[in-house]
Image (cartoon, rainbow, N blue to C red; front, side):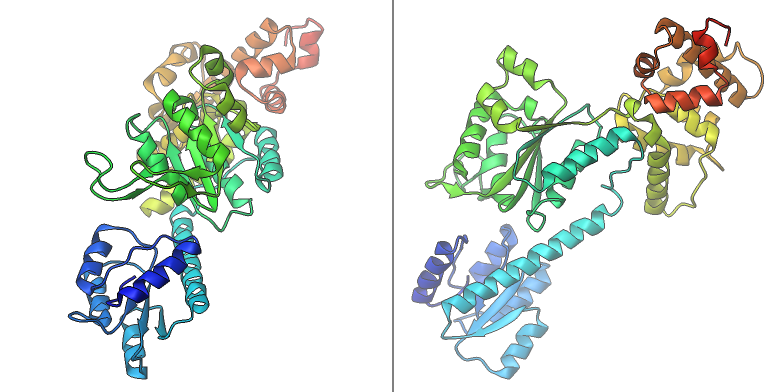
Amino acid sequence: MVDDDANTLASLARAFRLAGHEVTVCDSAARALDLLKSHAFDMMLSDVVMPGKDGLALLEDLRAAGVDVPVVMISGQANIEMAVRATRLGAVDFLEKPLSTDKLLLTVEQVLKVRRLEQENRELRERVGKHEIVHTGEAMRRVMSQVDRVAASEARVCILGETGTGKELIARALHEGSSRRGGPFVTLNCAAVPSELIESELFGHEKGSFTGATTRHIGRFEQANRGSLFLDEIGDMPLVMQAKLLRVLEEGQVERIGGDRPIPVDVRVIVATHRNLDELVKKGSFRQDLYHRVYVYPLMLPPLRERVGDIPALVAHFAAQVAAQNAWKPKPILPDALAALERYSWPGNVRELRNVVERLLLLADGPVDAETVRMALPAAASSGGGSDLLRFEGTLAHRVDAFEREMILGELKRQSYRMTDTAKALGLERSHLYKKCQALGIDLRAMRRGEDA
């Protein structure tokens, strides 16, 4: 808020703070410009008539400096020409003094709401197609059914699953299916932040609170106020920070490093990890009291090898996405290529599949076939079955089918023809294994009678 009248600044700042806003005040346009260049503000209120540089000149300077902040102009000497000029310079509203505090607070709330919606729209445009949860099989249908059930509640969800299974996508789905969808969705990967910085990242710090703290920093909890905070890889959070996180979850308020007052926060916390939290608790590397706070509703994501039936849809989705991003012509993915992709174990899960699809489109001159897949997959994966395939004759597709048939037959015998156990051992859904057997001419009834299939 910029005004050369100290009484106006004091009274309005008090009203804003009582309404739950943080306010920075200054008495000159020059000082305001410096602050806006070095700090992020949600909006600015500025008087028009001030000694030296006036509010309209400040507006011009902001636009020239590329500072994107909504501005509401205020003046006790308003006229139509002044209001029109302010609007042309980018002001979102123009208010006359004397000010009604209620009207000013309502204007601020409306400006902030529009600002938030604009930000969400930008994020949605950036994410279009990127965060879609593609699935066709029963495994992910069960997961999404649970997401729909728990999203509307305030229950804390702990998303479990291997790296690359899409835990952040599920967290976003929980946020967007909740009453908090209009608020921010903020993320923090606990494993990616150095232990000495994670407190500042979560709770923020004041200027000068430690060496290098040259400006105030708003932490992720405050950024996520009235929205959702996703803490990925919470199993990697240092023990000392676990205690501080527990306190915030219990009290609903944070205190910045170097701060002198607690700040209330209204945040739904969603956590995720690829680790076994039960084992971490037993080892003493994860607090049991925090475990009970965050492990209210566990949600297990299946690895890609357990949802092989989703691979064709995922490949089609990623292929279209990559082609659109690079302005490439779409390339068809041939059935033998899909079959080869389905046989791979996918240790990196869906994230790895997306990278491989991009590699396939780069490698292929035309339609993507099994040979392109062999070149695109990691060397160990593509060479592991290569020598075995040399035993078979015919085209590559025939050799692959013959090898796959032999692998399924061998596993069936090892599992005494129990389909559930065989499907689990091969990383397939049971229904997918039945379809494979039918396509490869494996007579399950004859095998169970002890005949040669």
